[in-house]
Length: 183
Ligand SMILES: Nc1nc2c(ncn2[C@@H]2O[C@H](COP(=O)(O)OP(=O)(O)OP(=O)(O)O)[C@@H](O)[C@H]2O)c(=O)[nH]1
Ligand SMILES: [Mg+2]
Image (cartoon, rainbow, N blue to C red; front, side):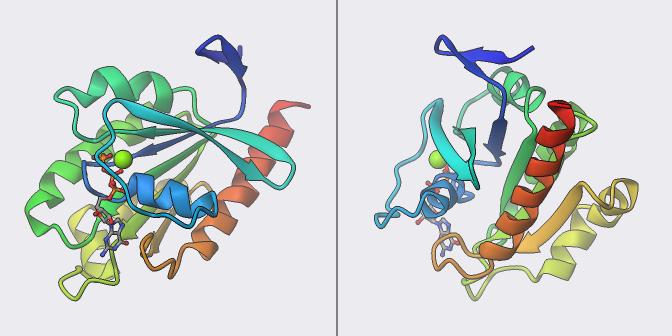
């Protein structure tokens, strides 16, 4: 059953989640090819459209600042074909909190969805290296459990470095899942 958002039927849904300030809105703007990457904290959510080849994708860019993210995130994540978890690699004080939410989002994610974990803000000198993040968040285990549908990449949404490769991965997986669903 397609989900209805603001009265529109949505079949191809992607959700961007992560703690406040992680870089979700910046990333979505970059993916849309917008020149202005300046953002303000997202209150509630932004609903955007993204193109993957000729597939139109409804992208929910959720605000990380809500007090009880569960109420907002869960219905989006559970209906998504693709989920992008954006992690702030430079904020060491929030690793534990991010890890907790990551586990929750992984539990909500449909079994046949594509799950992309992005270690964002790699341009900052204080950014934790990818290996350290993988170790701290136990990502090895997630990758080994679903090697074809769970991917981890370092990137900088701000500079654009490292964004193309994971987006390519997500686009390919997304297309495969949609094609399978429509058969
Ligand atoms: N240095 C650096 N800064 C970034 C990067 N990505 C985002 N930022 C900055 O981080 C701040 C927050 O970015 P947003 O994209 O608004 O973060 P968000 O995850 O959408 O935050 P909420 O909407 O509050 O959940 C902004 O000042 C961005 O410019 C990055 O890759 N590197
Ligand atoms: Mg935002």
